[in-house]
Image 1 (cartoon, one colour):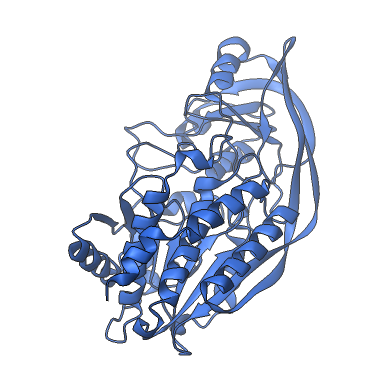
Image 2: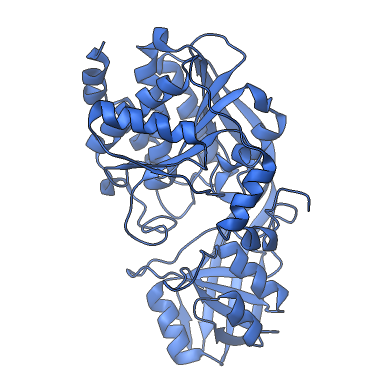
Length: 436
């Protein structure tokens, strides 16, 4: 019964797929590279033994990065455009607003200015503030430009989308700068007039979701998911090539254990996650929620050796993880809080059981993620294989007929968002999914 474990330890399926993904280069949502990655993932799932491997295309608002620049005094400072920034050029005084907390915007007149904010929040603050929320405050307070400064040192300008679901292209130009460039701008040019110029091609585009299946042909199913797209500035090894490699490795292991599956397992590689969870939103809006037994979403796996599973208050998801951890005498962290970012949230917000699988990390924020440094040599095949063994058994456990993960009421999830100080930010960015 345990022969499959040794097979996974010797398997190159997931790691080879990860190498194939990072070698594509640009996997930005709507790009040819994203489609190539989806096709590669479809073929890898078919080669693993999954049936009905296919692509499901859908239309999105396309955005392609061109040149960007900050001109300050007689200097030009390195920067990159934030996805879904408009193609625009503005000249205005720079205001260094530090962390860019809501109170900072309330206490400072930023009208007709270019605002610079850090990518983190101070230790004393009671909640995380997402990039898009800081951008929203800048827009609401009348700023005409937005500079997003990385808090991680290493000359790494951060990327990440702006805009909103109903208005995918933001109203003011936005760029990311490294910690070092941000420090220089604040020291030399705070209060001085600077120029922020963003060039981008904005036109309709097409993304796609990848689907494949294993196990019995039941109406009920367990979704094993990742996102295939990545930001165009790096290989996207950690975010989220490793997650997609993980579903290929799990599919390879489960194909050899298909008789152990009592419920259909559907593998889904979502497109366009990095620009608003568009692929998973599309799937969730059309799916029969009652038929989805659980969603196991890998986004951030393999970065560190120990798994962390955010269970969103679904106790049975934590219980199954604890059972697997005990069986293998291998730690798996479980976090009962809500996490309204990544593709699981398109389902969890409606009460569908879902978890976010990632690696434990002591650092704040994304680390190397969303920067040029998101590259494959920072990951290890050993970690991929070990985590694949644990997650394979986790999926088998959730697919058992005698395991039921109770759904949660929307009202209960809304109350949890409120108690965990997530409501304010979601309302501000237009991501609050519930009627008042």
